[in-house]
Image (tube, one colour):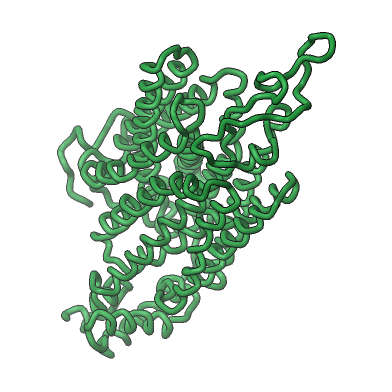
Length: 515
């Protein structure tokens, strides 16, 4: 190729020589698809093991009380009878975590999310030191160990500790694979390839997980079923290359070249020309000698600090709403297993919508409209559900909830790309990671928001709807990134998009050429 004679060779040039969308890339997409299914199983297993079924006091038939010798109602002490949904025995029904003890399951869920924050930060730092591939394998093994340990618990302390351990794996068990796949696909195919895997296989995993729970019939066996496939992940060591960009940043350029040669051989492209390799090594060594900016730089100047804070808040709103809406499947008048499966089916069409509209209407319009859409429908669902008195209202509640899940899927999946484009290139990796972790920290409040339904059924939906609407308004304060030269340095990030009006959208003006 002509690029082999040029004075510089970057990663994308080497990828083109190795075959930028050949057999190896299809293998990576297959492995990433498996990770998507396993990640959905691990993440949403927490939802189904903690479902609180209908329950009644054994002596009185009342929900949480029974009459004493004087006829006064006192807390139930004779035990409970359960109406198990689909015959699935949860940790709540087995350990009697109802009525005065109904706070225990949310505590376990909260520890799971605390673990996800610890894991995202700790394993993220580890990934920068030891590599993406070892952390990918380690995080999935932590998920396996945490889930199996949970299945042997009988009391809250060990249950919470096990959920904390399982939570440490969350996000990292998916995101490390995302980085590796993105590394080895050419830029114009990343949106299609990644969204295809997520849209199809994460959707399959989410739709299937409630039925795996019903087939297993009880929560301990369910955790074994969803955890056993994680034993496949250590085999990735023999199938996946390490992230080439990480190797280059660590000065291990020869190993990065070895990754591209391995891909070229698998794709049937033969040996990469030595002249291209020499130019690539020279270019990479020069890049490695340059100093990098730090994450603190995002907060040093006023305009960039404002954009960063908005991105952080938006990430927190998106992650909290995504998690809470996904988990809020009880008390809708239908089986929570059916509601979750039906609402999860919206993942695929939401990814299709992103593929069709993201590059047409622009990032700002997509982010703001999808969040506003979510807020209105979820808030309406909560109010209707609080006052429903017949099956028609129940059906309407489920319909509004499904539409809300569809909107938050669009907002969540498109939001990651928006943040990556707004954060300057020189701090993009650590900046996106920090914004992402801030979002996961917000999920600590997810089970507690859902718990507020015990006071009034509409409270969780109204809170989530309000937060979504606030997020939609804040997105209007961010600049558009579509068809614009993205910021490279912190100085570029400070000036990027200044002077743009809050009602200026890419879809409402003629396309301008990049400067």
